[in-house]
Image 1 (spheres, rainbow, N blue to C red):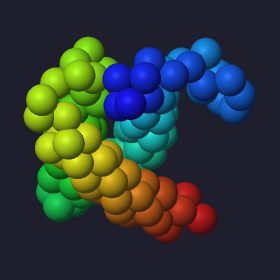
Image 2: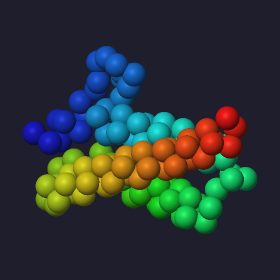
Image 3: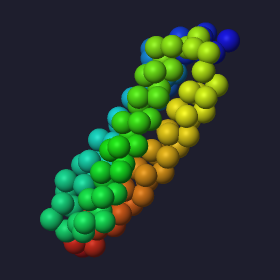
Image 4: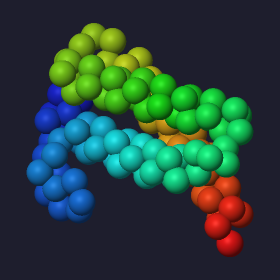
Length: 114
C-alpha cells in the first residue's frame, strides 16, 4: 500500500505530475526560497538570533527533504512506519521554522522600510 502511495502521481494542483514525495520536497524548497529572499532583503537589520533562526530553518529543510527522499526511494523498507513518521514530523518542524523565520524577517523588513 505505501509503495503505491510513494509512486502515486498527482493529477492536479501546482505539483501536477509529481509523486507525493516529490511534491513535499518541492513545497519545502518553495518555502525555503521565500524565507531566503526575506532574509537577504533584511540582512542589514537582523540580529544574531535571526541568523540562527535561518540556519535552523535551513537545517530542518535539509532533514525533512532527506527523509522524503529516503522514503521515496525505499517505499517498501521494513522501517517504513518510522520513516514516514519521521518525514512527517520533520516536515511540520520545517514548516513551523519557516513560518517563524518569515514572520521575523518580514516584520523587520516592514519596520525598516515604512
